[in-house]
Length: 112
Length: 112
Image (cartoon, rainbow over all chains, first blue to last red; front, side):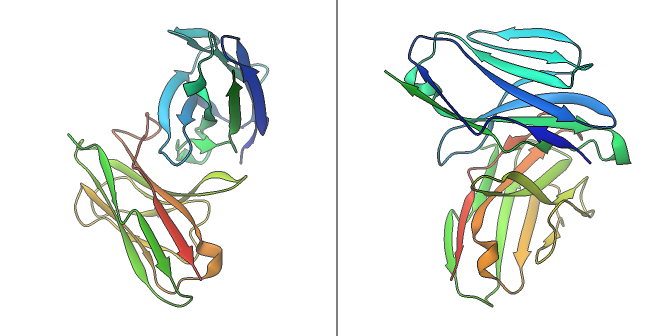
């Protein structure tokens, strides 16, 4: 099985930088996804990491350290529209399923 | 190109009633999934399908049945609804296992 941990809620100020952490314990790590979910809407893909290091995509970056079982999503120049839930999902090859397991999500509130 | 669609968007059931949720995708994806999302619980996998005519159990399959008679459709059935099945149900699809998932808009189900 897997154990995925994310903070439940975070708040930040418009224009600032925020880092959302995700820690995991898994027997056969095979990749980590970040999804964004606005209230009342479907999750949408943000990023994917399978190797250690930083992946940058515009204002959003995602980092992975496989040895530490740790990832973070970095949001720069925060905008009000970034208020959403951010879901970490870990892909595990244990059991042969490879289907990602989702964490409980981090609700980010951006205020003026 | 509609992506992933779900029918209905909202439904109220009485305990013991049955219903079927329909998911359709037009991306020719092999894999399809049904999740439920409850406050504080994240996305939990109910059932999934690796191709037409195949289905498999996920993390929380009890009380649900599924069918994938056509590649583009994945049906989720509740034979005898219970209040514990009040939730938001999301369907998703992916080209292959463990790849980026594309989610439908969700079905809000209330069981009284």
